[in-house]
Image (cartoon, rainbow, N blue to C red; front, side):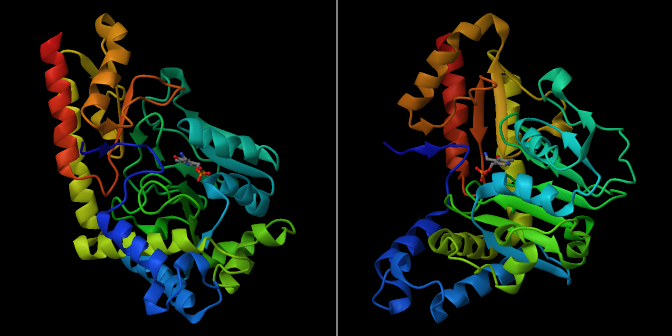
Length: 356
Ligand code: PMP
């Protein structure tokens, strides 16, 4: 049976990435060796790393004065590495859910944390607006796409202090004005790579703001100087990341990814709204994630939750069950998800409605 992969991460990648990865695992660049078994210091891998950096810069139109590095440790490692480097006295954070809180918790280890606003009062089902960012904060950190709750910040904020964004689950899904940020980071295992690599885009001048001596592996300057090879980098995930980036370039870039994301999510939200059984988790369309579409059964149909998950599974739809912390359903629609999968989900929603 054909599977439709709505997994929240690790998640669907383009067939191009799978095919090129298989080739490289068998024989990388006609070297007679597998990508899994070559030195990260080889000329061939150097070229992969360089191309991954330049393609990231190309895709996001990154201005001069920024560096791109590929690290291990996941986005979660960035949650403490950022305050370790940059939180002297106080940092500002926007509390939009589980992953934003991940950063907040770690920052508290290093200084004062001003949570400028929170959407906790409504189970993180909206993006807070109209708050004040303290001008004496060392930086302001946001999570642009809340993978679990299904909200997304779709604009590049003007911040009076250096702006940092966790873009783990929406990077490369829309054009971004990188100049508005001093740092963008993300685990790659949603929109562009298998698990194991974390992308960090950082404004070089922000590195003058490091507030304490940092251990080598937390030192962005070291990673930049060593071209992400201070130690052994995640070689294969970086290769696969590059393949996905090439696929994005060939498909028309992040503008095209955005067009597709809008088309997919508009269709799914429209069906959620139309269907008598379901309601969106996020009521304001302006706050709805294009990547992680969260929805619920209306209270009168709540007991059908398990039945709907089973119904989708029987049709080859994978990953529709919502995160255990929020329940309900979540359809993750990352860059590589074909419209055919969206249509299969919508058909399942319609057919389930007919059965009731
Ligand atoms: N931030 C966001 C927005 C995420 O979705 C995730 C993973 N689900 C993380 C951070 C944590 O990423 P990692 O597992 O790479 O540490």
